Image 1 (cartoon, chains in turn red, blue):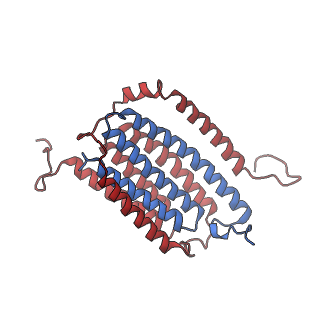
Image 2 (cartoon, chains in turn green, yellow):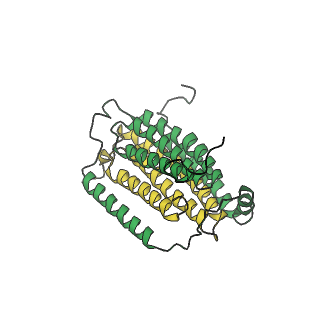
Image 3 (tube, chains in turn green, red):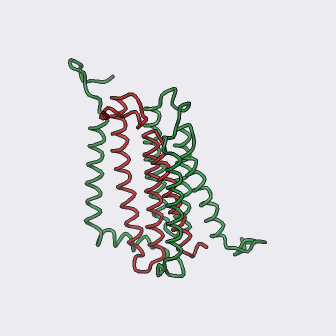
Length: 183
Length: 103
């Protein structure tokens, strides 16, 4: 007995159900990232948000991007941000005011922006294909290393520059007379 | 629903606006960086969605999204390093207390 093609009783496709679940998790955890009082919980909600977005990529038919999302965002950037939170958090942090004074105008501006974007998106004819196109990884690799070689190399130089710049910026200045060595 | 471009684009617009609100409203510099990551993710979702629905883009959409992810990783590294450097001088992560240039 296999899984039926459509959801029993409701009658939608499984892809729709997955998309709705992932979208709900994505928007919910995204809101938690910006409104939670304790910043370490914001960081953890951000990991959930990135994971839900990886699920959306899978539903969208781009599994390679989903893999890169998990590796780079959940694996690297989240850990970096959690480290930075733990290095900069003070004891009084969560108890103090987390929003600027312009929070209410910012909320109104964001909602207006969201409404305008939604109207523009639904009013525009994008010339989209009626069906999703699955991206073949082999074809993608061929184009990446043929047409997109220059951006690829530029990105590797940018990453190298970012690593060196990050180390230089975050390095502690030595006090005069202090010896460099293991602490 | 999963076969319409609009659903994905509206989802990405919502994510972008959540990030905008967080960037404008939070006081903590690291919260602002996390909001920027949310905005980048929203844009990335839109790029992948365009690639998945436009026959002329196809693989290009995914490749551009990969490049955006790599550049976002570099941006996060440098941004957090700058926040750490400022934190070491001022002992606070709150951006509204970085006011030494004010008259």
